[in-house]
Length: 267
Length: 180
Image (tube, rainbow over all chains, first blue to last red):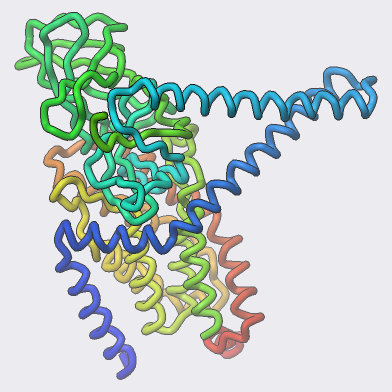
């Protein structure tokens, strides 16, 4: 090993030691800084991805048109394409109107946010949203949609935040089952295989008798999540040696999130 | 040096691109990782000090953008990915003589194995922190799947990066002539 390699190794070791000495706060601050640096790329990348998806959808509809009616004239196809574009706009308007209605009737102060990126890691379930400290968002704030609970914020930079989804094993939510006195802790599974993640409702009493379809809501215990938010619906239930466990389907379709709200307080 | 800077830029682009590449539901939600392929190419193409610098840079990015801090708990401390990248890149660097002889296939296979090793190491650290050992076929697929994908991606990526090295007149590559 030559001299420059030894010097490089020493410098590398020193920098590595410096990073390894970071605690939770230091790590969070460093992560927020890096996220802030790449925020413009994530936001523009998200826009680009939407455009590509939109073009792909357009191409698909044209292919279908060609297959279904080859004798249609060019003008007719243009009209159909225009109709398709208008339907997309209508869907977008309906979606935003729906979101706006929810914001107005909600008892919480909500900051609307758009999902700009999804989890890029195998072991954590997260999304990145386009709101940060500048919009009043802080760490450990609940994130919801009109359908129910999504997760909570973790790393927050000036204009971008990371949201830990309820499908992550680390996101624990105190919850109660509709129509019963049963309370438990909801958490995600370490490994998800299907498109729709499954949540586990643990620490239920042995006497619990949950039925598929029963709804599970947050209890407000723990201080992060307010009470009354829909977490999911019971899919299955089993009694174990010491307690019983329910499996839930999340109330929110976590794999197709577009718009979310960060709960910053009560109105 | 231009080539090294280009590799740094490519690592950043790849790391951001990974946010927009969805997991593959038909492969047990395995993710596609491009950054390790670039880093492990850099490990065989770059001199030792630059290889360490690339591992450091990629490790910092990986930790900063993926590792989660839950309340006051850091599951994988900042710096572990740097160490993982450096150790694995060091092994790849040791296989550099084969690469110079034009035996790329060994490095393509090794890239896949090393990608899976990073995921395995991360999973073991998480398992240790969370306190319950859980291995299932799905876990193994989520560890092995990205490795297989990296193995498939590696020949194309290596060819592209080699071409880039040549057009930027990277001085570390022409050693190949000595072996031919």
